[in-house]
Length: 225
Image 1 (cartoon, rainbow, N blue to C red):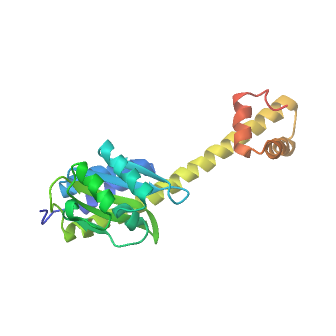
Image 2: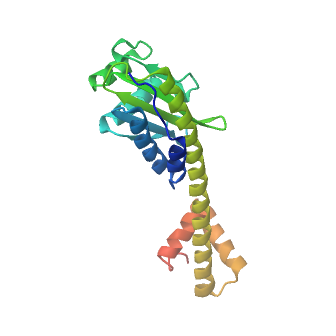
Image 3: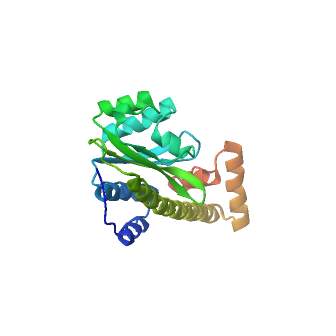
């Protein structure tokens, strides 16, 4: 059973904040989790866009199947964590009765114990972190608290990465639109206002976003007549 872990939270926080994208944060979180808890495996899920859709990273491909099974069955430690239930500590999956079908599948995959905590930032649940081990009773209540601490820092890093990603998407979109606008001005002798009106008109008629219309024009300058 795990006990008395000596943690370098400064290292953990720095490592998570150094990652540029949401998936990079989760990937680093998996490494930190297996190192911190000296466990066999870990998964991190990130809820995206609509409920029921998520990105899952795992240290083993079999864990991706177990993550999908939770979504399919609507039952499992990660489902409970995202729904706002308490974090999970399972000492022996063979005797777990909260999610019997999922626990049986996890046992068949060779897993015996786990902890699962939500990734929460400013009240929003962004996903979950789960640590697994093939040994019975590997985790403690103290590990749940530690994992929760790590998960909060990871969630903050994910939120920051998402903001960064969104910012660069906006910047890239504006650059593309400006480039397409310039193509029309040079090709057709239009002023800036007329060029953007032409792009918006094509966007409305084709029911495409302005960015998509601009991207197509940049790829094929003769495509917008």
